[in-house]
Length: 449
Image 1 (tube, rainbow, N blue to C red):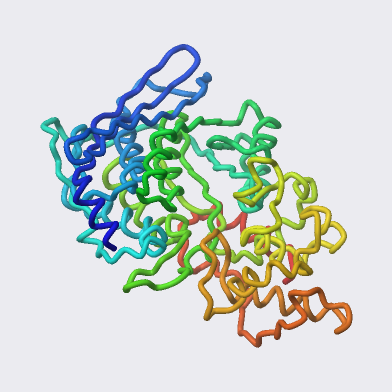
Image 2 (tube, rainbow, N blue to C red):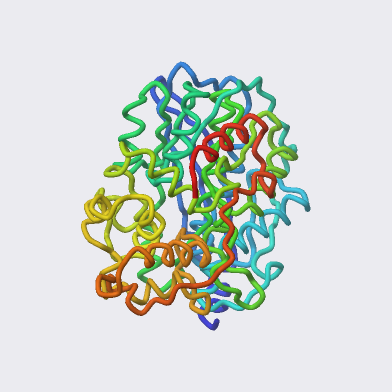
C-alpha cells in the first residue's frame, strides 16, 4: 500500500496527449501519445496500431470518435505503471456518464492488478478525469454496414468453434487477429481474402524500464481493447456484427477482495459486454453490433463442440506461456484446464499427443489442480472455467478408471456431487441476434451431453 501511495505522489498525473491517423497506399496506422508526469519529469509513451489496406476498407468518413476511444482503452497499459490519481485528457472530451463508464472499466479491469499488488482503493478513489480539451464533442458515426461478421481469432478452441459454426451461413465472414500467434496465423493464411491482421506495438522498452525500477505491473482488461478496435474495424469494413467467443463461465470471479469481485476475465464477462454495447450505441455508433456468440454455453459445451473439429486438434493453442513458441507449456493453469475440459471428449491417446503427456498424471500440477477444483482455493488468474465445470469433468473422467489405474491427480480426488445442469440457457442473459441464436441452437442440439 505504501508503494502504491508513494508512486501516486511521485507520479501524480497521467496525460492522454493525442491520437492520429497516418495513411499511405499500403497501410493505415493509428498513433497514440501519452505522458506520465514523474515529479517534474515528463515521460512520453508512443503506441501504434498498423493495418494493411485492401479494397474492402473505406476510410472516407471522420472516424476520430472511435479512434479516440481506442486510445482511452489502450492507455491503461501505461496508466497502470504508477496509477496516478489525475487522468488528464487533452485530445477529446467525455461527459459525466462517459467518465463514470471508464472509471468502472479501469477499476474492474484492473481488479487482478489491485489484488495482487495489495492495493486498498475504491472505484471513486482510483482516478479522476480532468478534461483539458476545448474542441467540439464527438459526433455519432453513421455507416451503411452489411450483414456480415468480423470474428476475432485468438488461436484457442473458443474462437475456432465460432468460426466453424458460422462459416456455412456466413461464408464471407472476416477473421481478425492482433499480433497473431502461429495457430491464429494458420487460420488467417487459409483465408487471405477474408483475413484482418493488425500489428499492435507497445512502447515496450519504456514500460520494461519502469518495471525494472520497481513500478507496478499486472493484468489489464485486454478484451476491452479488442472491443474498441473491433468497432473501428466494423466501421471501416462496413460490417455489422462483431462476433466474440466468450462463454458464460467468464462471469465467475476468482476472489472477492475488499468488496471487489476480482475477475481475471472481467472484460469477457456479460456485465462488460452489456456495458460496452450500451456505450458504443450511445456515444459512438449504432451501425456496428458487438456480442458473444458462445455466451449461452459453458466451457463443457464448447469442449464438446470443439471435439468435432479434428482438423484443429494439433494446431489450436490456448496456452499463453507456450503459444509464441507454438506449443503447450504443460505447466500452467490454462493447459491443465483445457486438458480437463477435453478429457471426456477426445480419446486419451490423442489428448496425450496434443499436450505431449497425460496432464492428469503429473504430480507437479497438484497445486494448480487444487486451485481449479476446490472452491476454497483462489482460482488461478487465467481464462479458466468454473469450479462446477471442472468437477463435473473430473468426476466423469474418474469414473472411467479402475482404482489401480488412476492417474496421479485423480488418486486423492473425491468426486463431487454437484447439481451441474448441462442444458444450454439460450434464453438466459445473452445478446445474440435471432439468426445467430438459431445457428447455435441447431448445432448444440446435434450433440448429446
